[in-house]
Image (tube, rainbow, N blue to C red; front, top):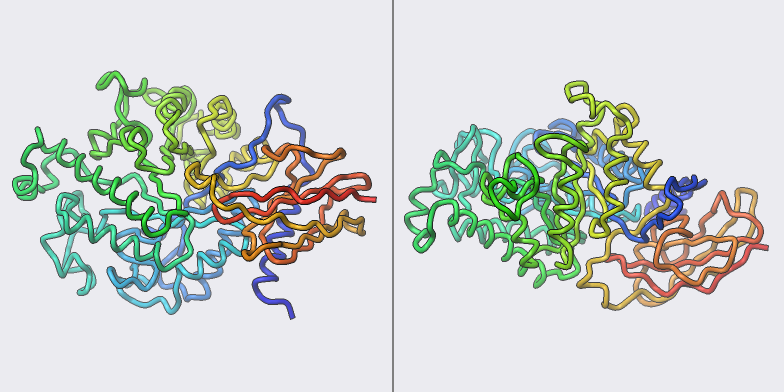
Length: 507
């Protein structure tokens, strides 16, 4: 009997086979990259995506999550960003914070399984990478501390939390809070086989004194010119310290943030973008440009949720600005795309054009600093109103892509070269038999096909599939034919590749 793991990998292999036939590229000179971030955000807060509502059984929650992974494979994505700490609670049995209320409807109630453990395992079975998405400071979507679970740190340490705008937040100015939040998030990192640690765009909720941290500022703010500078310093400490701690605990894990899309406007700061929108530097005390320039992140994924030509925040002006910020820093740049706006009848006419999002990705091609995109949110990727997502996939994801490789990990030990035992014609196309070598099972196999022999594997022009790794894989290429040449590379969890296998020609 095949194992569940083998069966699931077989399903993923079948999905990988659907990447062909491959249409001709609209731009003849465009060379598709071997690696590209193709991700989507799966949100849990207020049950936006998963679980879709509180109180589902464990089996129902599992089925829902598997459906999201199936969607990711269908849309030719390679990564998921899953929100596992939405309101200072946990999607795993944390020793720091209670079970999330978005699982059962009751904070602190055991859902009957380990959602994070399940999600990571199922994601990897399909050859997808799993980025654990955390909100650093939000405690509750309501403002009454008495409604928190009795064991919640906000109840145990009421001096740690502050109300604002009908919600509760940890106070970022308290050193003990900053360390606690890091500890709570790193608990997931150390206990689970995740590929990335990801912050969203929320830090301080406002730039006013209505968020009443005056007493904390009086205690810790000496030497800072004003409240805003001190608050920015606190967020800087969270970001820089998280980098240090992630590198200490699991250096192979990608660490990054998806901030709001405008650092500062040029009218405020000559270094800013040619925009006139909300500024994260001022409104959220998040110096996003500074983090990139100081090398505190592996990647940054600004949420550029505007259409091309939109005043006062034009996508076509923000893309070159962010590209210039990231250029030469070693910080990878991925773009957050507003799938949720496309086809929404409440949006302006530009968002009713099925090609708007595809044009975003076309524009990105002119900026080599951009290494891919993340789509918000998963439900909109699934619903595909007006065909905007399927248009982008058809126009830009013709070839598969490996997940990005962090520059700092590129020189690490590479996987061992696999053996392509045979490539032979069968009734359904061409069947390949791939055998892993070395101590470690590959995370993926990258399969290349060409009518001629191939001598370079640095791009995806001949890449026909990326399939889940195993010790032995049989895969059928429905478009393969007599005379084709095949090669296979093993891929590890951080996207390092082996030397290509010896080629096999189909006779």
